Length: 349
Image (tube, rainbow, N blue to C red; front, side, top):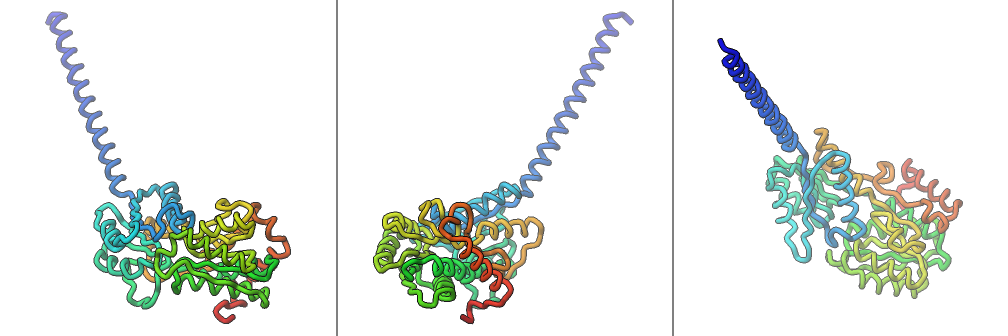
């Protein structure tokens, strides 16, 4: 055998070996790609339909969106949102999200969704649903794949009412609601009871932006109500009106009076004029609901969250403690403890 023949044979063997290595490499890459695809298929995806006022209300809807962002950051989920807008069919938006094969959980944000999301949940039993501020009328009729998330707004409102009753210098405070409804009446009643608990002689002025969902997205009307209440000696006004609350803050700045925010800490909407905010932990509840799904702990039925569950609270921090002296803060904390322990039952007052 010549040296040339030996060289050719060795070269042929080397080429075969290289070809085998290439095939092995390609198969390995294909497996890695398949593994990545399988991971993607297993990723949780959440759908969410906003309430009246939509994203950017700097209140209720933005709190829900913050919960989605936190879930994406901490749990690695994907999400898709729909902002129905004026006159939109919210049930259709829920059905659109529920019909998508890759969406595992659908949220409806706001009590307006209660009936619609119940129907849709029954039609899509393989999907999970959650409704923030669900109106509970017949708990037994809530399907097993729907969790009804409700808050004890009257407890948080009671505490900011106590703060208003102790801070006021005119002995007159105000309340502005968005849509006149059973839910918003909980804010109003809690606030009034809190103010009168610490200051029996106080006057509480009340006004509503409207009787439909549009009441949550009319800052101009809320501003008119606020200016009227300020002119009637109110020096502090609490709102539960979503996007409309921005009108209150404009009036507070204009008249150099105080306002109380809602849902989120709204200090930065009118720095120096926000006495406190009654916060509903909507963002945390959205995150926890998604986490329950990820850990196979999701449960249907009613989930009620109050002070004891850290579902509601009030803001006291470096931004507003110059408006609430330490003595008032201590007293409000004592009252908070009594509500949690059951010594104070707001519905009995």
